[in-house]
Image 1: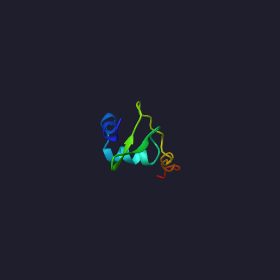
Image 2: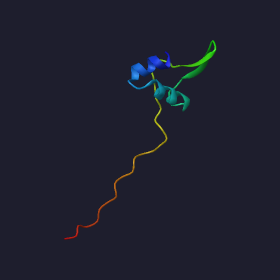
Image 3: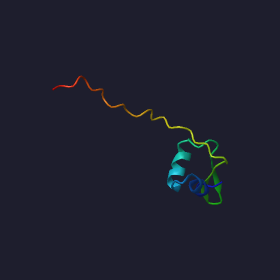
Image 4: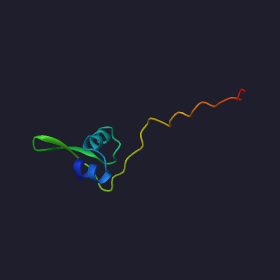
Length: 67
């Protein structure tokens, strides 16, 4: 499957799929030369690895209320 087909299947933009491929987050994606240009080949079904950003920050705990 091409990056454009994967973008349509996932409901995201083509650029986002290319970014995920370049970051190695789509399992099995290969960057191959097709004539004079490079394209991404993505296996089906699409498996996306989670990012390394970590959990979101928790809000600060509030102390006892002051009157």
